[in-house]
Length: 252
Image 1 (cartoon, rainbow, N blue to C red):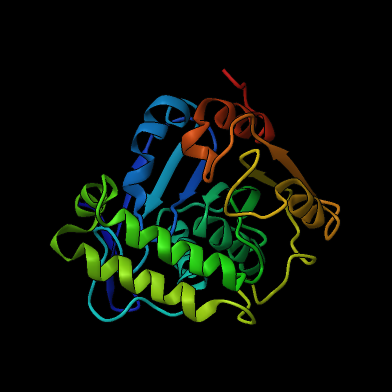
Image 2 (tube, rainbow, N blue to C red):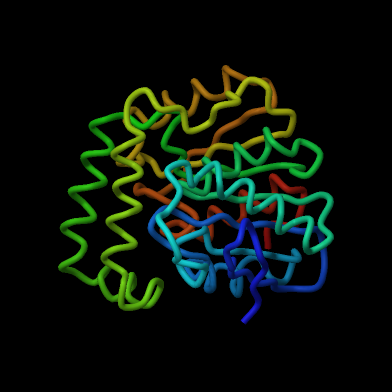
């Protein structure tokens, strides 16, 4: 399996496709790049050179030590390092949930690298305490349902420990902790914010997305046709058409 070294840790990554521009996909919290396999096969692999990786402490990446407290910032650093490792000097980016936070941090840290970004289900510059509690309760309930099997496939036998550690980082970051220390106003690339209509993780979904577009003239937003969080997955056809159009590619 392909790995590269980052800060003494083995980071699992993968590449797909051989034509078009580069496209980096950044996964959600408590998940791994495995969540994108069907999406890549159906919607992106034919049009882009796609690359993905598992965040430190998650999926197939090294689980030595705790998940970093600021893993959405750490994920951006890893993404930049992986891009350099693969010889990528310019890429499109799609991030969903925590991956949207990582994508925005990446755009701030390496403005020359990110051409355009689609940020799906972005939870905000700060995590609302009520939302953090909702995520915690939802994950506890999911441990007893079908999601438990998915987490096992992603993280292996230690999946509960990994999910709990990820949840703990969210609880620590609620309220005043800035998920994007650099702020949104200084981002230099076009960014599209997407969400379900409505997105249960984003209160007043359309109004919230509109506030982001008011921060930067390079920002726009798109409400998908279906409700739900992470439209990249639960409204994948419409989302992929929008993303490809935003990146200047045929939506077919």
